Amino acid sequence: MILILKPNVDKESTEYHQLLHYLENFSDIEYRVHDVQGSEVRLTEVYLIGNTHELSRDYMVGLPTVDRVVLVSEAYRILGRHEDDGRPTSFEYNGLKFGQETFHVLAGLCAVDTRDHVEIMMKALRDNGQVCTRMGAYKPRTNPYSFQGHGKVCLPFVFELAGKYDIKVIAMEVTHESHVDEITEALELTGQPTGVILQIGTRNTQNFELLKAVGRQLTYPVLFKRGFGITLDESLHAAEYLASEGNRMVILALRGMKTQMGNPPRNLVDFAHVPVVKRLTRMPVCIDPSHSVGSRDRALDGLLDVMHATAQGVIAGANMVLVDFHPAPDRALVDGPQALRMNELELFLRDTTIVRDAYFDRCALIKA
Ligand code: PEP
Ligand code: MN
Image 1 (spheres, protein in one colour):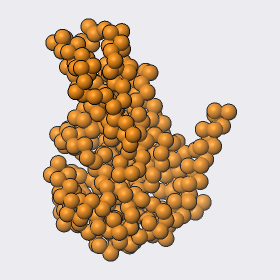
Image 2 (cartoon, rainbow, N blue to C red):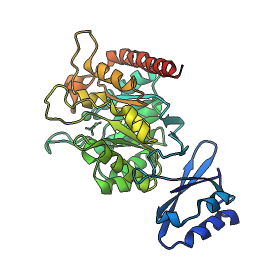
Image 3 (cartoon, helix red, strand yellow):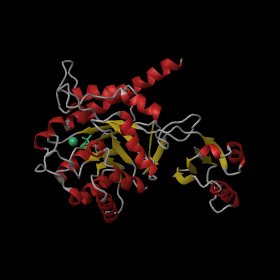
Image 4 (tube, protein in one colour):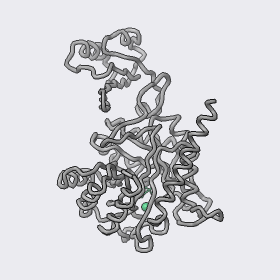
């Protein structure tokens, strides 16, 4: 059960304490208070766990601080959608809104290699009106002898260049909780020139201690990749770990599934799950066509396979696209074969806009 309180509730007020006193009468009910700060109002939600049918719904709705009571099913209590829910399906971060209605492209380097490549990438993004990117500093690699990413060493120049080219948000994978502190230190050192969305990679989907640690911090949103070899339900439960620790600024990313079917693509494209995740949860949904397709192969119609996969997700209502680009894919240290070239950026963005517009046309058609 969730109590949604009136906006900007005063936690010092007797009315608020009246609610807490009521809840404290029930020894087998635990409650957790979560605040969501929007640009105009602060929303407070009280999550009740335990034998909640002992509680009087009528009494609670009658309290001056309570706006409404939402009954939740067991699954995905915080991030899920529940009957008569009405809780937000978006959040704001560093001046940008991320939600089930918004759309952002995060094109960038799979892995940061040289300062020059980062600068070429960010300048191209700025020149194409983009304010988000992806930049991997900590890379989870299959082979322990492969390049593991430059780690904290590259963060200062990545953040400085983001500031120089007006990039507001960088998606950056973390594979250990200490990476979050390193990111915070580097942002402080460089004067907070940009924002970061912490990425949890598919290999860490069920690294529950990492999820708890990242969920406890409320500074950065989280881009959470589905597990490539587990069910959707298992991935959504894993995402809920983040929210259960307090951070509900969570975006779910689809990135293809490992199957027995063989290549290509590198991972079976799973973007039919875009509308499913939006229906089951309040999370914005991101698609990663690069790690799904895994190549720069071109279809007979002239479009790249990555563009076709992107279109499949965007036509289904995806809210974000995470896509690998590189100024010199042949020299990229990670995932060069799937990175698009800089001269394909404008084309990629235009194609994506065509498909996003077509998605709106489809929505209008079904409403008419
Ligand atoms: C990535 O986005 O760089 C990455 C490693 O993705 P995934 O975790 O989906 O393989
Ligand atoms: Mn990669």
